[in-house]
Image 1 (cartoon, rainbow, N blue to C red):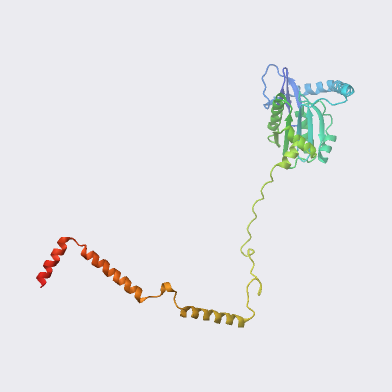
Image 2: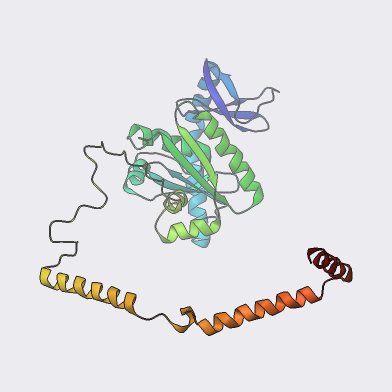
Length: 312
């Protein structure tokens, strides 16, 4: 018995991907399956799938060839792509898929991707999840997934395809949980167009545009190895020196003379004391006291007179 992840649920069949990247289709027999669910696959079911492939593969190849030839002869243009999925590790590829999520075209965007594409074998017309699994498996074998991370970036032209593609890629993420870190991310047509102009996949373009990680702070050196932030200036450099001591003494003498001159200089008029002014202030004060004495209440005046009589 093998284990596998449910990738697609059809009316009569269910498609499961094994840990080895093999896709097996078998009858549901009335059972309900969920995408992403882990199920057991019997040897009989796997053998039936392989036998069915051996019988139908030549016929399918012939039918696909005739269909492609007819399409090219009819309008000379490939069919419409409903979505694009880029696969980025060290290798970078992009698949265009139709409305049923079958791969119509697969392109490499770097040398590693070209090598994977050459050794990939038959991929046209297969489910996009099956092609992605084959690309990941081949990239691993060639050593193009060194950091164990794979980025899947997709952009769809309508909501229905977008939702189906999101579910399928999410099931791939769960299938590789123990082996790799597979991440799917939705993008926009504008991002894909900008990436195409630069010769990149959409995922490669998003990686390039993402902010760089901050560098970790450098370790501080030991006290013995620390370099002073402001080096001490060498002699006769960075400090003022006076090569003429005679001029310095002359300046000091001039400074002392100015101090003596300031001390002997007469005070300004505002600070000098004038006797006449002091006399006027004293007289003014006496008049104020005399006025205050005359303005005393009557009972105080009578009391003073009585005291004068007693003194007499």
